[in-house]
Length: 272
Ligand code: JAH
Image (cartoon, rainbow, N blue to C red; front, side, top):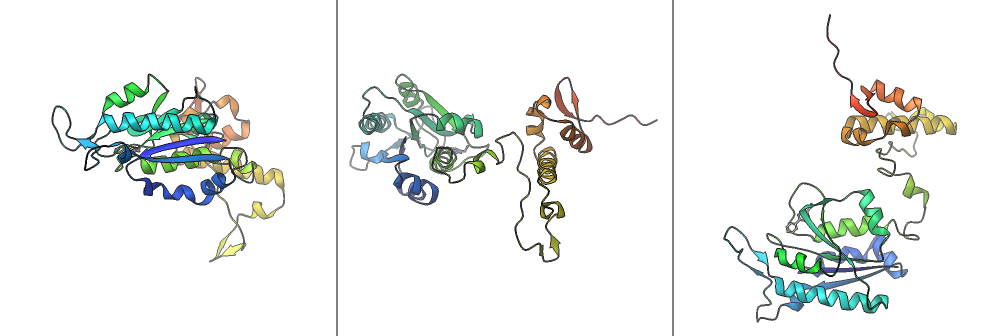
């Protein structure tokens, strides 16, 4: 069972978590999700959660008092749900300034019993909230990429889906979890289904051959070529010692060679 708490000023934004994979996981008792409205912890007449930035500048900053109270409510609610008065969540804070979120981090998070998310809006949350929270629990700012959203809610949808589908029982076919993009540091190979010819385009004949070893080799080659062409950064991060001779031959065709135990693009030769 994974416990999730989300604090947001837009609880309706998280409605997709009632649907599909996550909705099914919740109904099956594999995920326990609670959404907390930050404004329930703002006590002025207008339920204010923001104020002008200290030092001046554009936009608004989320005030610390509602956040301090809301995170206290998350601790109380999660501890009651888990039946553990000493438990602490990992607090994840979507931010363009966070650690890049990837499949390795999704696996780390899926191994934890309790995750909490703090969704910022405007220019962000008063920094003292995260400093104060860090005295009680691990705090991890997370980035989904180098762009700015209106707030952390969409990032929470992404992280919750990526993590929940790694939990035992959430995805039907366990093999589909290991066979997909990024599990081996390579992009996935192209996939096809019937009909064998569509608008004059054929399914590659090897896939219709029934020759399992040839199919596996073709898929491996396609993954390697795609990764080399589309994501050279992933190729440069691979350990060449984990690849076989056929892999190295395909990557040589794509213009990659191993120098000092790392892949690098083949240097242009000098004309004679
Ligand atoms: C924007 C609070 N890396 C994606 C990402 C995550 C969070 C935010 N933007 C982009 C964000 C405004 C306020 C968070």
